[in-house]
Length: 418
Ligand code: KIV
Ligand code: ZN
Image (cartoon, rainbow, N blue to C red; front, side, top):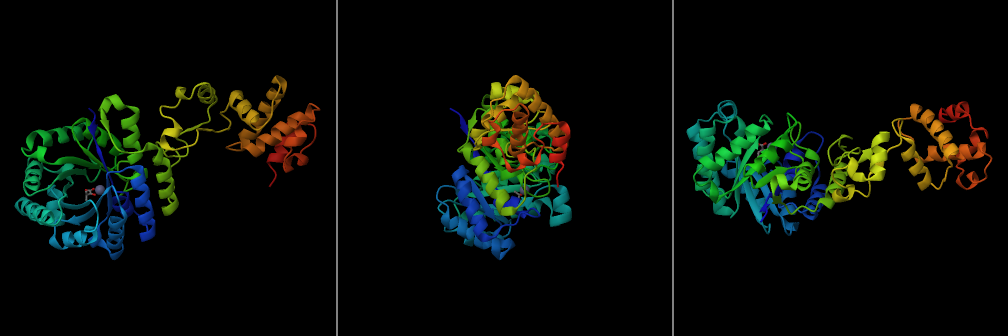
């Protein structure tokens, strides 16, 4: 049987913390509903002590969420934990998430605490959180830059104090995939009570390997992945949910695991997030970028039109996109042009097609993308030159502006018009 991986979404907490991604209460509540539809197991809704807005959002999401667990973050301090619990207590499935840093650099310079004090705070925070909530997640902040023996001691203490989930964050995105996989394996092997808790990872993307680290963690026994939609999050962001999920789906046998994610909700969720935050994803972003299922090069277009699997390792439909996108530009070939003209209602002879292609390349050299409106002009011009009447039914307003005889100059003139 396949091992079940829990998906912990922190778009509304770590993601929302990033500059430019703040959301108001209604927006968070709306996105949380969509995350449930997407099928995430846990929605980390915010950091209640950090602001009144975060507190209210966690409370509203806790009340409305039906199936997913709702988590609220707190430092390893009673006041934080109380506030988080106040926000979470009405959730059907609440989870208190408490954290403390375990690396020497964080303990010495930020916390100004000794290892012994951090161990004591870990026990206190987890025991206190467990006295309020049956599900407690403990995170060892900056775990990947921590002394491994000390990290294992902290993890053992947290489980002994009642933690039901142990999270290992690569807080500053420092780890390499092979190191991170090794760390997860070491924790599983060395912490004697590890089997009593779920092992989770939380990878940042500062070196661009957040997703790779999460996947290596799965191969080494991690049972929960923390991630965000579109990979948003502090600095360079977190492991992107859509990348982790589609890697697990597309390369299934490499992992032999399953999740509860409905992949067809990936694109709608991504779009909702960009719409709410007005922050677009980069065009070449894996899975959800505008170019992720677009093809412009002629050879690729020819292949995709013959069989999409030639250049697509997953279908657009599997992530909730209606279709792929054949972009007509200067790298495109006759086959893609012909297919698009046919869709627009033009059946061109070989000779007409040659002329249309010649015209198309002229336009494509000037414009980055040739759109349907341009194609109508090209096709209509070709028909006029060849003295056919078919063009009438396809004539757009622009056609009357070009010479009835199709020349390169007239097309230049037409497409250079202000
Ligand atoms: O990156 C990090 O260490 C975190 C923890 C609070 C889980 O976001
Ligand atoms: Zn983080």
